[in-house]
Length: 114
Image 1 (cartoon, one colour):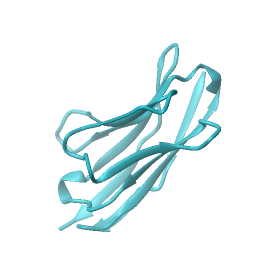
Image 2 (cartoon, rainbow, N blue to C red):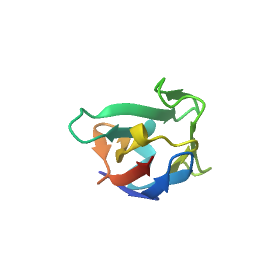
Image 3 (cartoon, rainbow, N blue to C red):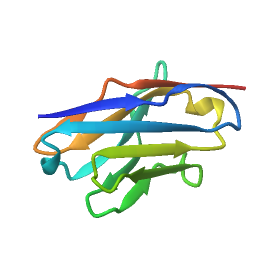
């Protein structure tokens, strides 16, 4: 079992920045990839970014150049640094971890005002 706890969401004006954190606990040795999805009101959940156990990263086109995913040396916490935020980035952001199963965090709200 893997438990994920997100933090760092909030309210920000367009052009502002936020950093999300996702702390993993439990069977962390089994995790290979961690990342973020988001879900805006009335829309499907969409991929944002991920980082593999080897450190490779991938981003959705909509966030490339503005969002950066990283992790700590122990590979137990993943961060999502978000800059130049837009109102379209408003969503609940969910951390996930791929192990034997895919585990999800509870989500953290990001609201960007115009």
